Amino acid sequence: MALLEVKDLRKNFDSLQVLKGVSFEMDQGETVSIIGPSGGGKTTLLRCLNFLEIPSAGSIRVKGETLFDSADRRGLSEREIRQNRLHFGLVFQNFNLFPQYTALGNVSLAPRLQAKERPDFKARRKEIFDQIEEHSIELLRRVGLGDKLNYYPHQLSGGQQQRVAIARALALTPDVLFFDEPTSALDPELTGEVLNVIRQLAREKMTMVVVTHEMSFAEAVSDQVLFIDGGVIAEQGPPARVLRAPLEERTRQFLRGYEK
Amino acid sequence: MFQTVLLSLTEGFGKTLEIFALTLLGALPLGLIIAFGSMNRFKIISWPVKLIIWVIRGTPLMLQLIIIYYGPGLILGNNWWGSGASGRFTAAMIAFIFNYACYFSEIYRGGIEGVPKGQREAGQVLGMTNTQIFFRVTLLQVVKRIIPPIGNEVITLVKDTSLARIISVYEIIWNGQAFIKSQGLIWPLFFTGLYYLLFSGALTLLLGWVEKKLDYFKV
Ligand SMILES: Nc1ncnc2c1ncn2[C@@H]1O[C@H](COP(=O)(O)OP(=O)(O)OP(=O)(O)O)[C@@H](O)[C@H]1O
Ligand SMILES: [Mg+2]
Image (cartoon, chains in turn purple, yellow):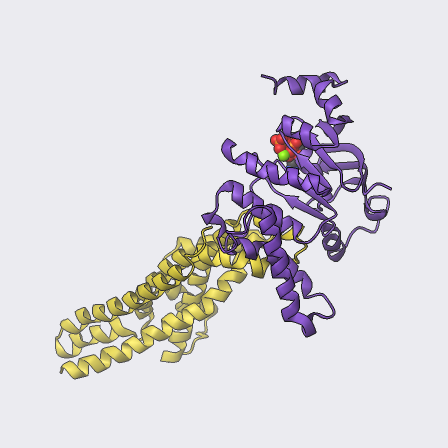
């Protein structure tokens, strides 16, 4: 059974159809790269999967559990949306770290708030918070920031900030981690450190979806590549095929822009 | 003589402080309510609120004091406020609170709208509730943004309190001026300036201290 199943996902903004029926599946431990021209709907797809936008139609299933199905007319409550979001993590193009918290504070904030809903929270508060702190420090070490725990975002470089954002997204142990152009807001010399962290996560079999313009990275790291254009998946397959020998003319045209 | 003047001015300054404190006490929270009104997504609510803000900010506080105090008597034929000092004070407080609430509301709105949308969304994808996002993410960033403009308004308010004189609220300028008529002395009026200077100076220090406290992060 696939870990994530997306079926016929559609999204309209008023009369503008942005997603026109997107379907794909991915297995546990896979890395999927999404490429495609500007305005094709890549960000909108990620936002729908993270319930920052509610899809107009289609369905989203994780581990066989239906998170969203437009056939179910009932609609989602605020609480259900929140529960659904916990299956996923999202790393934004411009990091969106919380400026008033340190690196460690950014990573541990959401887990600490989640912990309050545990039935044993009152009795084991201190122990639980210690565990969360330990886990958060461990995550920051994994992204190479073990020595920056108490730095505030403005004291960190863009690449470091993005790595904190990755640690923060991992802290709630999502089933799938999404990245929306994680290096687009970075100076070229800082992209490497972020891509290396994602590469490392891929080796550790984290399930990930990465929207990217870094074609060589996509080729090296992913199990599947989706080419999204005009709100549909115009082509999909193993990276070597989609990137080296695309079947569709529009994929070829898009990739020509990256040749040099 | 100096002691008499000092006593009278200090008593007047007590009233000034009272206007100042009550205005902040009323206008800071009321401003937030007005701000939410002006940001309401239903135009039937936001438009009238914006109209009121425009009128209040577009006309002098002195005129608003006069209209609020004399208006009911002239238009409705009975003076709600009564004829005594307490009636004049109540009318003055309503004018001050409403006027300052409108200024504060615009500052709040700017502060709230100035927090990037991504902050909220980052909280949402981490499974935080709207309340958690407001208190743990947004609020402190808004506070940091609004402290300097709120501070400016607060310093302005120190001096604006003297406008209450127009409807005979006996604040410090009124008391200072009284010495011209009764004793032919002008210096007590000049002397009132010292009170304002010391008070606004103290507030400036306090505001600077608060800003410094929030200096550990950047928005
Ligand atoms: N909230 C919104 N309201 C209206 N239109 C929107 C909204 N969000 C996105 N769109 C439109 O949807 C289309 C797809 O946008 P999207 O951001 O998903 O593209 P993208 O593939 O991520 O592009 P890029 O590579 O530039 O990031 C665009 O035409 C955009 O203007
Ligand atoms: Mg995008």
